[in-house]
Image (cartoon, rainbow, N blue to C red; front, side, top):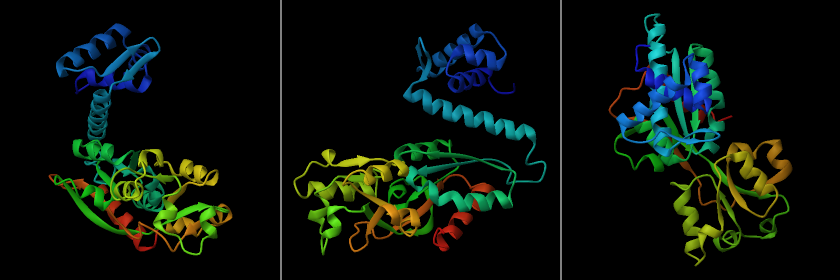
Length: 302
């Protein structure tokens, strides 16, 4: 172990969920793992784990520490494998943050294309709320993040690469009361619950204002769900309204169960971007990823 063995043991505990299981994986005694983790916690000044009768649970700060430690160990492993010495700058781990998770479908074709061109790439896809992905990007836990330009634009230490715009529409279940109206207004929409994929820009401000400007408590009307299959299920079984990419509304699956509110949309066109840390030059795999995403948008995400 060229790196501090305490990092290996601590990451092992996080992945195994207990000190006993981590010791078995690492091939050392449980007491050695326990001492190492405790010593590391004393050095950094905070607890990485909550110790419970059912195992070890990461604290909030511990989760961030493990993200960084795991990345350090993986990078060291790639370095020792000598991928760069083999003349393939595209091999190794590519860590991608997606915010919100409902945008994951945008990456299917770009990632498949990238893997065909560079089979040495390994993917680590992390979907999370925007605030979490930004912190992972700033700390180096992810190499590149994809999301809405309006949200990333607030951070001066990030560099954004424009990726075109995503066209979206509001949708409801078939048979929804709104579909019987000749013209849908904001007042009509505010009469129903809304399933928002994010609380950050551009969704958060628009959705909150939809209710607050009418004297309604948005906390009582907005579901924040970035896992689209769940959002879709809620819409199918209630009168809630949600947002989807225009490409999805053209599918047979959508047409069988839902209807788009095409003449009314508070999010007509959402500029997208890939974000990287401004201080660091993106590695070749990151640049290749951004190129693949740009081509995907150019072809309408089909």
